[in-house]
Length: 185
Image 1 (cartoon, rainbow, N blue to C red):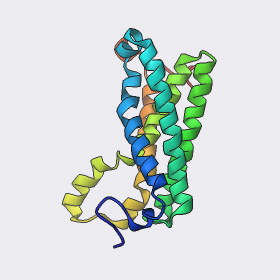
Image 2: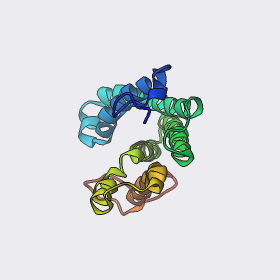
Image 3: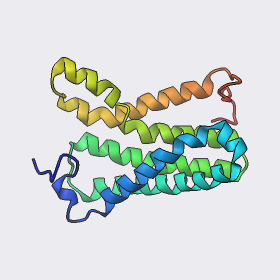
Image 4: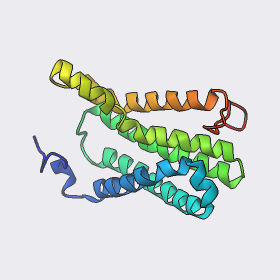
């Protein structure tokens, strides 16, 4: 089937840079981004929050660019729609990170937080379908092609719907989230 092993497809071998960048910076982003939302960490260690936030930003930009690089350089490995989903998610991550950066540089913390929530939702869009794939596999005993084609876009849409719901619900003391205002859009 053209794979070196179960994880690396053969067409990545001649130029491994984009997949290596994607894996390394995706891991770094995934490890640090969730801690950015901890109010306790932000309050107790604001310097750590800022520096890890910069690392998350750079990692996200590299992750988005490497996703787009893979789509443009390598042949589609999961179908045209899957490649389109990867390209769109890469571009959307970059755009949402730039909007988050613009917000924080202008001191609009709620807007920054909202854009970072959207960034994480987009980024983890590739992982969300796993929640549905496992039960579906046990029911169907295989994955229909249309599922793997659309899974990234489905995951992104589902995650973004959840984030938008969080941003628009009534504020609570625990969550620290605010209802939709001009400042959270």
